[in-house]
Amino acid sequence: MKNEPMTSNSPDSTPAAQVESMQVGGVALRIRPIEPQDDRRLVEFFNNLSPRSIYMRFFAPMKQLSAAMVERLTRVDPQRHIALVALSRDDPGHPMLGVARVIAQDDLRHGEFSIVVADAWQGRGIGAALLQRCIDLAARRGIQKIWGLVLVENTQMLALGRKLGFTIQRSGGAEYELTIDVTAAAPETERMVQRVPTL
Image (cartoon, rainbow, N blue to C red; front, side, top):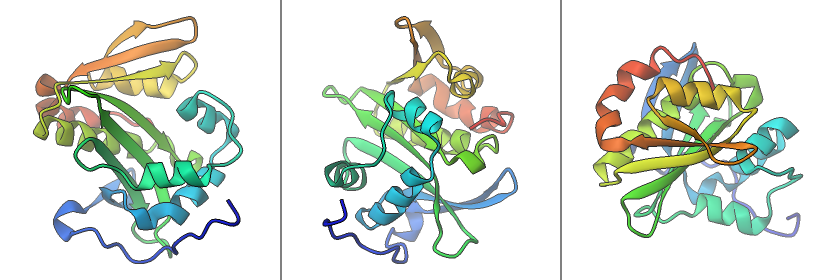
């Protein structure tokens, strides 16, 4: 990737209506859709993840994100791909603290979620806040069910799924499948997330 040009951490260009500022677990956050200009932030975020957090997210060890993957993860189709980032509001450069996604399938009624939070900021509710907003946005776009695979050892994500009302079923020897009816879950998420100190 060293030969691939990247943009700098320039000021946010997201419209103000799409940006939400909040305090979560004592952390001042700015939550907004991911932007192409987040490419460097995303690489720095990934490079600071522990091998375990990378494995929990990608189900495989990875040493770096390829340039193609960085582009795919930051230049998303807004009609099919909900991608929200949590940025530190107070730190210089506004580093990325977490990323959550829901990618709609071909029928546009089902979507797959993924989520990862920087190791130093896990356990403060950042992941719960991000996933809540993904669920809300998915419901507004007509997605009816969200699902995702979670490794058996990812106890934090399993606990979060239970608190938010996901149905959890064993999918294979090393995975659980989490599924939630978005139309039923979205109105409850705001109350539920306040009681989830995970991710």
